Length: 581
Image 1 (tube, helix red, strand yellow):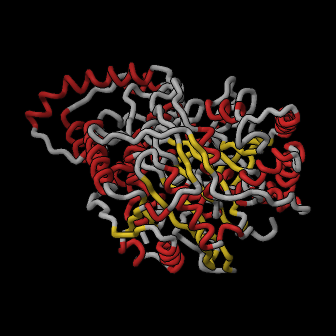
Image 2 (image 1 turned 180 degrees about the vertical axis):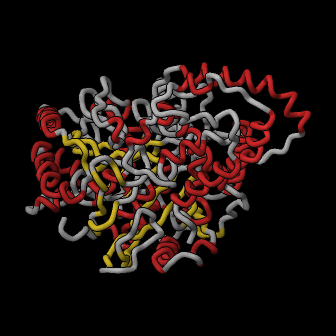
């Protein structure tokens, strides 16, 4: 099997340590509490310093070349002092805006249309756990018929959060009073014949990266534990306008990495002895444990897909630019994406239909509609697969492929590009180092609970030694990767494969393509460590979910959601619940 996303990021850190440039950035972290602009004061560069820096940067200039550049480099220190002296808020994005759409490769226009594939006429069950685990579509049908009130549904979830959150650490903040107020408003609307759409009255959980006016938004990190924003993220505003009910803010690995936050480690409901993976840790854990109808997550490099695999949820990472990030913590401006985590693939379409749309406060967003047709004939689709990925996979992976073939779709070999995508991971480390420069230069990164070679503080320090010119080259390679993946998708509606196979997770995050993770089976696994691939072989084994991923062309999420729904029905694995929840 391919290495996990953590290994991809670890490789980027190693690359920074080997190929980083030392001279001009070597004064970073010079003294505890040193002001960034003062770190260059009194630094007198010499030809020897330049020669030493060359070794870190993988360069080899002559003595004459070093002498010629000395004055220019000394002047660069003044530029660094001015840059580091500027106070930049996390929300202030770079002037350059990433666009996944390529020249001469037009994106098909879509209408805003949502057609569900199932029928939702079942009566409201007597067991409240059955109500909690019902799909958004089913809950919506009960709410509109008057068989269930939003107030009762909200209380069911609040009770379950109170009961199970101590064991899972899925929520950082529970907004019980707000939830009850919003539920009461939804019931009042229904009584008056007012219907705001498929999420009206449906309770949800929100990753604690999204700003909520007057409510703690901590980014899961020690330096921001008391942070209370004054305004709402655009996604929060949209969900409020859609009538959704906010239950609370879910835990995330500190500053969007892993499942460890300032309150502990978020757990996997299928095995509460292990972490839920991350960084959308609490969102996946809460959805899997039936603590909300759906949750909002974010992904830069696996943060929706990885916890969805671990917790057995349906996680959709939309196309870059599909959903506004305005009001969300920025980690990597050219890679950050917002998407839904649900218990059923079709539910992700319902949520995306409300989140989709252009936002003037996020210039990366596209003016495109979103179409989902759950009743469409799948036999018209062509889905690709890479034989090697399934040869290296396991029986659950191969069963998913066989189930796909049984649906009548055309399945044929996919020409996955022969391309080294690994350097693209450096984009995350460099942009994240810029986004959190203040923590590095103030030494407040020492406040973060996770401190080792794989943790953010070390990643950021190493990234500051990566040459700027080589970062530009990586961005040019990114364009080449975009062209390669776009060409590979010609003639295909979708691609199926194990989540991390062939570097596809990194590749499609970098190119902006959407990815849907769905549960397709189970495996007996020991309690796993932070890495999805590293397991502690001692102790009891647990029945834990396994899944498969589907990728599509840019902005064609509707196709992979329809395929994901069909796979769930064919395999039946998505119906099972974790024991004790």
